Every structure is written in structure tokens, then in C-alpha cells.
Length: 193
Image (cartoon, rainbow, N blue to C red; front, side):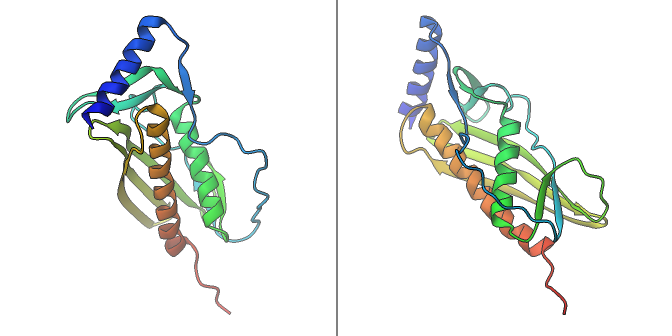
């Protein structure tokens, strides 16, 4: 996987030397048709904007060179700030998987609503050919609190930034599906007749 590291660095350095326009990447491009699902009853889940360390929310895509060094690309850039992309895809994914829950973007001060915050601490390619998606989520309502750390490693299927972005998207989608299952258990109460 050393080849992947060398290929990414050479592509980045070559692009800098030739002054080519940067390439822009998005986790999910807008679809032509938005899903037409609207829940008006049931538990309410308010999703706060996903938070990231500053170096991950940079426009350049992050790559971990070794156990202590991370660089961001000059020529391979996010099309939109990463926190916005992750928040939007989180809300879309949870809405899709939690059919009985109203999933809304915060802030909302309704006391009976559940509040979900998610801090991403890893969202980068790595020198060994893995894409890393890691962090912690926190679910609160009143005195009830649930929290768990997560980490997903996805092997890159090919060299280059398109493969890295696809692997990061896959790792993020795995976390959204896993999180939806955990939230289903915590939020959706059985109907009492």
C-alpha cells in the first residue's frame, strides 16, 4: 500500500507544480428526485451539525502519512465543507432507516425531543490503503443519555482520490446504518394498547 501513498503524494505535488485546477469531490451528489417521506407523528430526533477537528473540515481531503502525520491535499478538495456533507447525509440516512421517527436538523429546544450529536475524529485515507471513519455519538433526552464510539476501516479498491472518497462514503454509510439500528432500540417505544 506504499504505492497508494506515493501515487497520492505525487499526484498532489505534480498538480501543484503544473497549476492545474483542483478536483472537487462530494460524498453524495444531489439526486434528481428527493425522497417524498414526511412523518408528522412519532418521536422527534433533532440532529445537531456533525463536528470535526479543524484539519478534517479543511477543504483539502485529509491523508494520514504515518502514525503521527496527516496532510491535506491542495488539488483534491471537498466540493462543500465536510461537516455540512456529513450532516446532510446523516439526516437523509436516518430518515430513510427510522421510518417512525421525525428526523430534523437542530437546533430545537423541545424538551421531549431526542437530541443527537456526533463528533467525527477520523475521516481520512491512511498509508496502509485504508479509509478511516471514526468518532463518537451522543443521544440525549432529559436524563436519558446514550453514547458510543465508532470506527470503520474500508480498504481502498483502487488508487487515487476517487477511490478514497468512495471508501470514506462507504465507511460513513456503514456508521449511519449501524447508528440507525441503535437509535431504533433507544427511541422507538413499543405501542401500548
